[in-house]
Image (cartoon, rainbow, N blue to C red; front, side, top):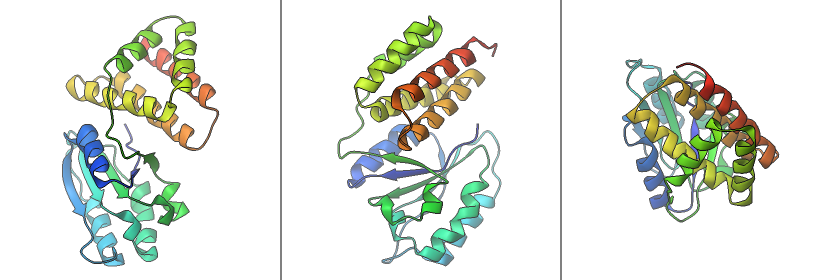
Length: 216
């Protein structure tokens, strides 16, 4: 499963830390770029890209992290573009920032933007249970769940679901589950691009229903 590069944006560093711990604690941190001065330079970006090009065993989920990405100089950001497009399926690149508007549009277009509030992510096990029930039942169940998610905060609801799908996939990896997780990330990207919320969620749930019916 191809892992989309992520931009995690929040004004609260602790919220970002909690999100990373919740979602990526089982990943192996291969490279961590942190600002030592008031900017992240072209040389530092090139070193980061070089680290991403080093191969790792397929079974290892590798994490490459850039803190305070808003401090990347323009040449440094441009140097990362090719790297963001050429990641292996087991590589996850994450840029954290308190101001994603300082990142180039070409960076933003290559990444999935996750905007967090100042409150830690609250989780509810019923999220996964409702989802699994919906994709195992009639199409009406999927339509009903899409409507419920739309009435709440769909981005938060989908982020909760992605969290549980990741946890479930780490405990018991299965191809349909991995494909469903990929569809969830695509749907999250659609929502961030202001695609019709209810239609995007319905399409996601119907796709998951189809994947769930395929033999593993």
